[in-house]
Image (cartoon, rainbow, N blue to C red; front, side, top):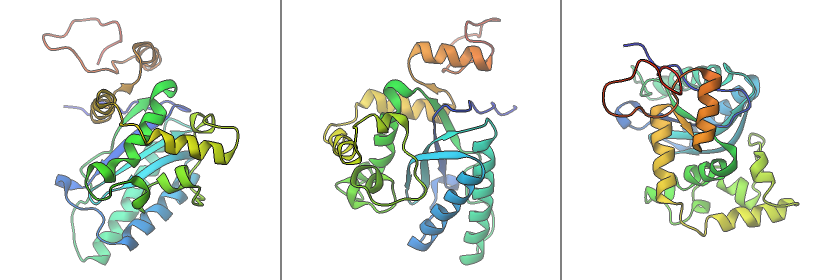
Amino acid sequence: MPRRPRIVLPGVPLHLIQRGNNRQACFFADDDRQLYLEWLEEYAKEYHCAIHAYVLMSNHVHLLLTPETKEAVGGMMKRLGQRYVQYINRTYRRTGTLWEGRFRSCLTEEEDYVLGCYRYIELNPVWAGIVVHPAKYKWSSYRTNAQGEPSSMLQPHGLYLSLGTTGHARKMAYRELFRQELDPGLVDEIRTATNGNYALGSSHFQEQVAMVLKRRVVPGKPGRPRKQGILGVG
């Protein structure tokens, strides 16, 4: 069965996750994480992907980014993944695959969902029980987005910039977002859309994306498929 093409549109934010094979570890030491981030920055610049948020967990990676071209994300992740696997295999004297196949991703509507993805990504270490607050976790974008820790890689999304007229105001407003629990319904939406390679957003946004891409961008309904669908052939 052929693989479904990824849903990617230039200039539209994308949330992606890449997992270790069989959910096994893909980072074994801080040096591994540091090199991954250095190479991520290098290839993000080469392929013109603006990185807004990230987290490196022990067995998976989350990124929120905006690509300039349709091919940018795939090119960046291929180069990054290959280089990182070669480093891991050489360093730890291992062979074979490291990643669980292709990365999973979803297009993200800007209005109500981008800042939700920021929070979803940076809260991962809290939900995993590693830390009690995202500021305590070194390997995420929270310390830059919320506390102003320098980063030459991160580029703030327009919705982040709209949180305030100054850097100080934006950081205060961003920290305030984390005082509220992320809506469980939104969490489910993000997970479903990302794992299924769908469009994350309102029905209007999903319909617009489907019209542009001429394909289904939401989960199909149970039962026999119809010959024609409003959102195109899936």
